[in-house]
Image (cartoon, rainbow, N blue to C red; front, side, top):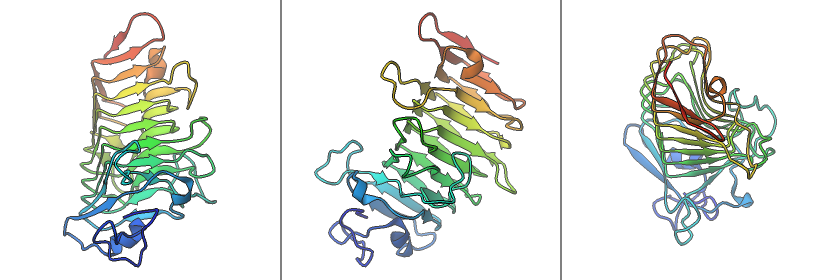
Length: 288
């Protein structure tokens, strides 16, 4: 795929005959065949998708070709978030016209930069895992939101996922980094969330009702510092009522107060070796 120079009439078999949109590439894929979609392209305002892109076939790998930060001889691995026009529910609502939706099992998204720098471009989730998929893996990506801290982007929302993986991603300037919640008939359970960095987010991780039996380890929630970009950190880890039986280990949250670093309104959650920092003074270890 090549968002800048691709054409959905191409066969998609090489970079020279690349397709333009994820939806068109999905039409070329076969169920259960372990298909790979490789995306290349630069970050410019002229390369946005104009509608929600949906991966709805089992066994799809959406992979970046090139380097995350703009190197690689024109094969920069980036995804510019689409325009969102109307019918947008906000950071904790349902994706309507923006972002990337994962709606089937065994989907991998890796090596991409998701870019939603303007409040008018995206006011919803960049990636949504919904309709109860299993075995979704989202790793080694970058999620950038609005640098002014005014938009309502969130990086990832997982709803009713079973046995997923979110690891080694970098979230910055998004209102919510990662949100996990139940779907209509299924808990969000069995997701490993590890080694992610959340910087200048309003909320780092939010476990909502019926996000249960998930494992969070070695994630870092940081503030911007004196530069002043992005959101002011409200809470690093927020566990709502009915977010139960989650294990959180070796978390570090840069916040001056424990009550805003971690809030646990669920039950039977276990926090081990979790540390919150202060702008000056001594680090404090918190184990609930």
